[in-house]
Length: 226
Image 1 (cartoon, helix red, strand yellow):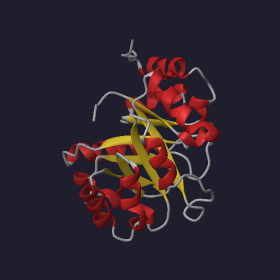
Image 2 (cartoon, one colour):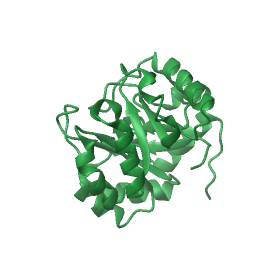
Image 3 (tube, helix red, strand yellow):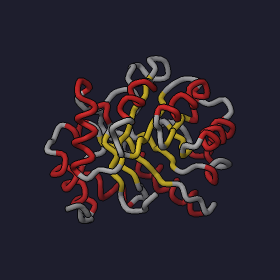
Image 4 (tube, helix red, strand yellow):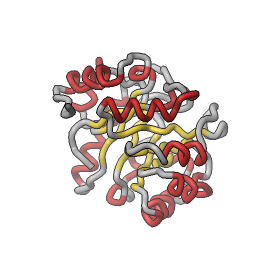
């Protein structure tokens, strides 16, 4: 996976009645990733997508499917989501009784393993699994709903995580989800983020190519598409 800034728009803020079109428009705009917020109404107070929806969309999309499982006991559904087309599966440390086992199973199934931490969860829970994950997701809002305000102490958490990753020679990317806008993009990258998830701050500002350009300019990068 590339090391330059990656923008992964969250479909939680997209037009649910036209998901296939939304995915097509994202790809046409030059995006390479898309973020699926999977919620079960138990781990978080909301219900969103399941494997059948992802599988239906996978057939006609070349985007990298970044699937964030905000669900209880995710082990029950890992195979379903991988078969549906997830390229990366991100589980919450708080929802996994045996985190190492869960991450190993994701790898065995052929997807990239990632782990997410809620705002209150300390980084220490990652100490022994960092070498085996492809990405760590720092939640910069409490999960469950879009449109929330960025929690300021998340910047320090990103900085400390970057240090941990460097110390153990991990290749893990750092993803940030919650309150991400062009206004804080540069700060997030400077503190160590690699992948930015943006929902309402992205989808509420079409056209998508122009919005991607706004994020890239905030990052100090050029959009590398025709």
